[in-house]
Amino acid sequence: MIDAAVIAALRDVLTRGEAAMWVTITSAQGSTPREVGAAMLVTAKHTHGTVGGGQLEWRAIELARERLAIGERRATRRHVPLGPALGQCCGGAIELALVPIAAAGGIDWPRLIAVAEQGGQFAATVVLDDGGSIELGLNARPWQIVVFGGGHVGRALIDVLATLPCRVRWIESRDDALPQHLALTVTAVAGADAVAQARRLPAGADALVLTHSHALDFDIVYALLRDADPGFLGMIGSRTKAATFRRRLAARGLAAPTIARLHCPIGRGERAKAAAGVDWAAAKHPGVIAVSVASALIQRQQLLAERRIHDGLAT
Image (cartoon, rainbow, N blue to C red):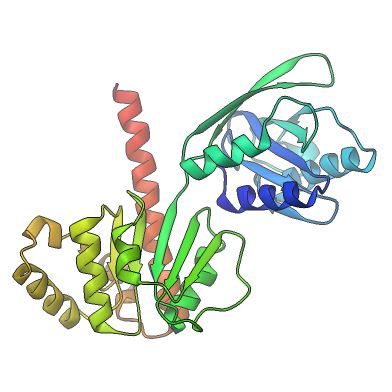
């Protein structure tokens, strides 16, 4: 999956007309730190995304900047064994494609961005400097998270989510509650009708409800359960708040299976408590809550990925 931060940075690079290199893994054998399709964007001074870190990534950046420095407009590929020569002990090997942005190499970059935003698959034939070509297939399915609330926990959570391969929409009903400067992967909507935004939640997006008002929390949760189809629905609060909300949702006519989709308190919860002796769901510090919630969402994404792989093997 292409990290949302890389797509956002690609859009920014294209807008500014800055020279950059798209670096992606096109083949992976044995033990490797990232999968085929993992990509990063390299400019003369900055990098966005990762192809695995360590000496592998250092070498990929070096190769990309060498080609940027000479104004190379042709794509190339490099076979990189992950052994002692590279100072790594993974034991596998990868092939990297290095494709200049805005070069005539076969990739329609605006189209790639559009496909990524729609959550689809992107494929292109890339012409190489040796006269050959490669088929570049990229999984652009986004992980979307919508956060309702701009208080202390919301801010801490946004800081954590901004480091993950997801796109975040941050909804706040108050006009002046959100910061001015945010990560490229975070879109802030201040002064919004949060309930109306909940009704328009993208299908399958994860929704986190943590506003300054219990009454607003309830209205958002009710709208999400009645009118939308969240992949995951979490709400900050105590078990008492959760029980109260569930009774009120039932009184509004929602069925028990629908109400059961609400997770409250959100976080690692009892499973983590049993493993580590700490009930993260009962934590009070905003940073601890944020990490706990992000951990639960990551775990869910991993389970979904494993299920997709299993279903694919079974068909």
